[in-house]
Length: 313
Image (cartoon, rainbow, N blue to C red; front, side, top):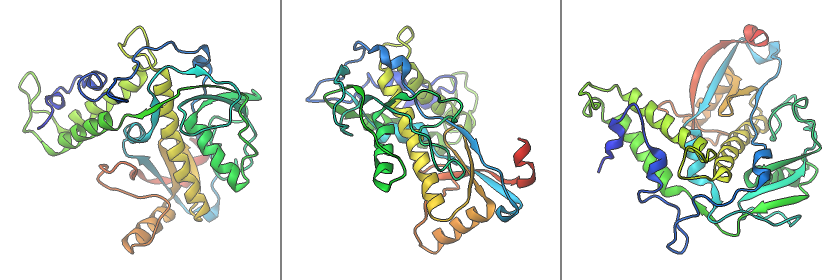
């Protein structure tokens, strides 16, 4: 059955859907919607970046901008969030099954000329010796410790939840509505009876779930106050895109930039090679999807960006 909310191009109430059958339950119980939030929530750093490196003659004449399909929605489908309130757990050993906040040392990033730091920002923006981050960011850094790229993830302090749940049901419902918005064409009309362009409904849904993520952190505007959920989704999205970028670098595909957290910029020749490998059935560091439907894939946002203009942008 199609959700009538997809006809509301002006507003898609993704937040309300969590109360209408899509709450992440534990033992049959709905989560704590407004638990006390620790003061450190205001200090949490969620990775973001606007990174680029200079291009050379070896990179070619053209660049291609790739955009992750439904980055926040994909993150919401996979991330683990706290069911109850976060509690002060101190300098415990990192546990990826505990959602929450962790205080770690912000080490310099040694591969800045190849890819942005997994902590985001720039060396100038992050002068603090320590930083509060989420489980998703620490998990990525812990994996880099195993490769010898990141020194350590010793936990200085922490606020974590005892039990985690996933927002899969909610994310799946939003995803179904997103697919319906693409498939229905003009079969659904807006409240005024006018035919809605498919992209308008899809844009409303995208704005609806993105707004829901923001409102998790706004207690005065929402019945749900879970800033830890907001931070977790954002950090999961950033970590996923960073991993794809790192796989490209390791696979010999030149990465020249990344912006708006969900974008990766490669040379056009690298993207052509990705297409060729995928068509030949060979594994690739990231998957391309020209339809923009498949979560966890990338679509082409700008196919031919002149490399000569890159340094001046």
